[in-house]
Length: 82
Image: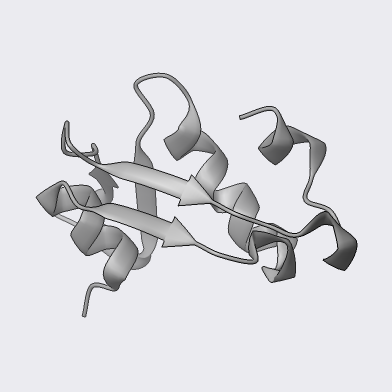
């Protein structure tokens, strides 16, 4: 079952990830390719579909917002640069 992020990507919704600095760094690292120009999200947890990993290209209206309070910790340098 697709989660909120996948649904937002495919349907063009906006999504806010609040307190992003509480997220596991490996989870945020998975978002890095999505935040690149013309980025995509590879969903390898689903396994192969027709012999390939599912790759989701964001809907043109999709937006993602990450919010954090720096008093509660930091996020990776790679994520800050995006």
